[in-house]
Amino acid sequence: MIFTRLARKNGAASTLALALALATGGAVGLAAIEAPAVAQKKPKYSKAFIAAYSPLETALGAETVDPAAVKAAVPAVVGAIENASDRHAAGGAIVNAGQKLNDMGLILQGLELMLESGQVAPEQLGMVNLQTGQIAYNQKQYGKARTYLQAALDAGYTENNPEGIIAESYFAEERDAEGLAYLSGVIDARKSAGQPVDETWLQRGLAVAYRASMTEDAQKFAGWYVADYPSETSWRDAIAILLNTGGYEKPETLDLLRLGRRVGTLNDDRIYLEYVEAADYRRLPAEVVSVIDEGVEKGMLAADDPYVTDTRSEAAGRVAADRADMDTLLADARADGAGVRTVMAAGDALLSLERPAEAEEFYRKAAGMAGAEAPMALTRLGIAQFDQGKFAEAEAAFNEVEGPRDAIANLWAIYAAQQTSGTAM
Image (tube, rainbow, N blue to C red; front, top):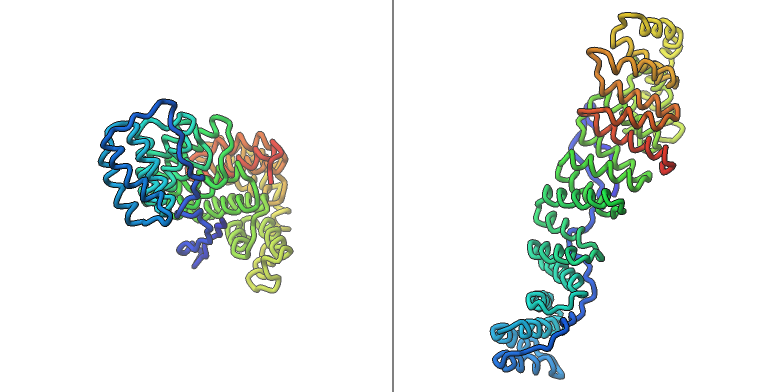
């Protein structure tokens, strides 16, 4: 599964062009079907059932099985059922008929009769309900599939991905919100219990949410994906999801691309150019120079591209002036009565110049000032702490961020936590 940054026209995102490898919404693999064992009790067949059963038994036992004869005998057998033993035997015979004729509809009918009989051995209830749910799903009987798959789970049977098929049954009916809510609940339960989460569930939920333009769900699954399965692919997908769904302005885009740069997932010229635009050579010239040089070194930007060369030249010309003016800016930002803009400007300049320890001072001050854009200040406080290797403090700062920046800060917090635990990519 690969998500890419949307192509941009006149600085804005264009219509989505996804390169997705969605998990199939088609047939699911079936567990091997075996005739379920009967619970330990002596069967008692009714006379009418025995009489109706005989033609089906004969048709199934013929040297050359006649499909028409077999199918013609089934309704009479079902119609003659009088008790649980009849129902279980009828179901078994119909399953047998379905296997001989390769007729999944008959197999489904037979398995349902066996389950309805109450005579399936307790140790096989989970497997039989799973098989019944799988077949119902492949027959596009999605509501029925959910019923049997949930029964399998209730019986303690978790093999062969019943939860995933239940989620797919909602997606197949274009009930994406319900499917994502179900899948989210399963994932939350697994996480609460300290159990691993299937990677395909996270990939599928992310793809469905993105396709359905369900932004909050897409961002949630993106966070889960990188938290549980950190890799170049998962981080690139998560950052692309936020870029494409967040509707961010340049300050938010800048802090998200800063994360992408530190993770190492900036992988094409459009992303590097967007970073350059978001940083703005007039505001953060040192960072623009650094990003352009990195893009050229990695072969993502053409060194002879007029825009690249002109922008780098303009930015480089401003770096020396910024360094020369830095002492004055810092003094103004530390002065009593300094405005929040001056304090933030000091932090931004220092962070751009790769002086995060000094930047931390000003972001911390700005975060507590009246009129401050606290979510931005806290985000950049966390970045400054992250760049110093103060990962636990950075995570705490990111976790304080609220509002539109919350999803960006959440990804930063996840990456900081992974640095602390040693699980970072």
